[in-house]
Amino acid sequence: MDTLNKYLLKAIESYDYNLEETVESLNYALSYEPENAQALRLMGKVHLEYLHEYDLAAQYYGEAIASNMDLVQAYTEYARVLILKEDYVHAMRVISYAITIKGTDKAVLYMLYAGVLEELGNYKLALKVLDQAYLRTYNNEFTYQLDFTTSRIKEKIKRIQPKKQTDSKAKKTKNKTKKSRKKSKKK
Image (cartoon, rainbow, N blue to C red; front, side, top):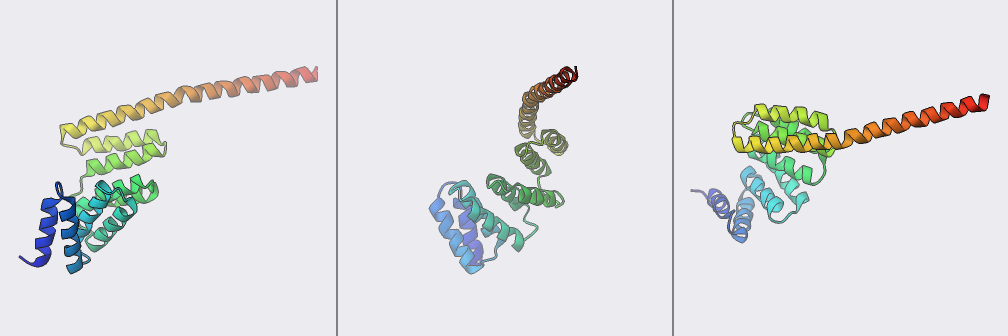
């Protein structure tokens, strides 16, 4: 086994329980091969999940994808980082591209896309995108998550609808008042 694989495997093995060993192994792996996509991805994951350094995480994920565009796991994680950074335009581009790649989890990607649309207030389109996620999931647990997300978005739509109706009624009343004032001035 070559040195790179040894350090990368050590990092993967220790990821869930020993952050210090993971980072040390990743640093060794990246010092041997700075463009190793798996090592870059895992370093991005460390910065995302443990250190909450989203800018660095995004940088590592971007480098991982640039190094190996077929690294399907990186796209979902990269999109999540971009969403956390509120870089919605870039996140939507990454997700749109990732959906075209064989082997990516399309259901998760569509759900992330719907989440971006929800953040932007485009609730109806978010629901349509969630329909695409439903069609591509084969997991009951994920289906429940989609159901919850769908009901949350529908609730937001309901809360906005009365406000819009109230606003339109107020406009009508305001217009009637203006018309009646004009009529009274003419008399």
